[in-house]
Image 1: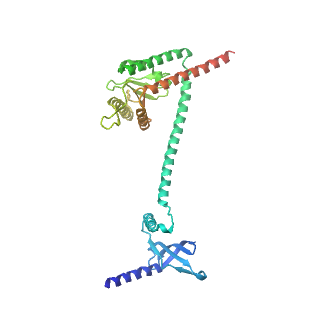
Image 2: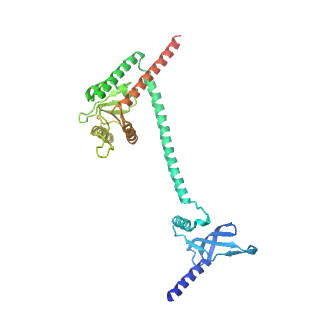
Image 3: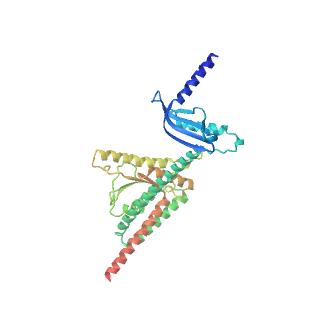
Length: 348
């Protein structure tokens, strides 16, 4: 009985406090005969006791509002978002199916909207990246077209012959599953244009420290540094793990990446101390050439690696190389034809 008396006194105290509130701002709405009022309130005796007061009532005959007791009190220190989430969950659980009420979960809808926003942000980021990449590609194309003008029309047939010769050698290595790495390296080094017109016109082959096993270092006419690791076409960048069947980098691929990164670290160090040496260059771009006619899974994984390594390192296959080289030849033809047309008009 004593406990019951204590509980009643506590209840009366709470009810008294709820009645004794100053309400400064409020929102109210009606639905049928039911009215709801939500107000910002504070205790008259303690202005620091702030929160939200919720009261409900109903219209009776004559338009009088009968309040449903003193209402509900939500103190400002309450975690409103979590409280409202739990309130909705409880109400949804307690509403019987016989009431024929379907409660839409606003939190599920909100989470869905948040997810859509994240997806849209990702899509926008990708579009911006593609736009910037397209802009860079356009600038490089215009630059390369200018370089191509310096190559005579008579040299085009030589370029085409060399490309066919290298392509035939790569097919032979692939079909016979032979390394012939030095042979293919020598042919590529003798034809640097195959890596891009900027690696040929006014470009310089730089010396490489014998401590590093890099195959080629070219400084373009635009002071861009390109360092190359050239591997045999029959060496693959990835192989399936025997236990898990997951594609993993091969040792040859890992070694090639490691060689480039080690060389880049050296250039960063020498750039800081401003030493005059082979390493005193600015931000070299590393290129790994390996693999030919890769399966679809390996191609997709290679795209992922390139995305992560960009812009410092690029991995290309011999297929990529030949596509790029054919474009270079077409670009030289286009530039040469324009030059000849211009010369012909001048002669007239």
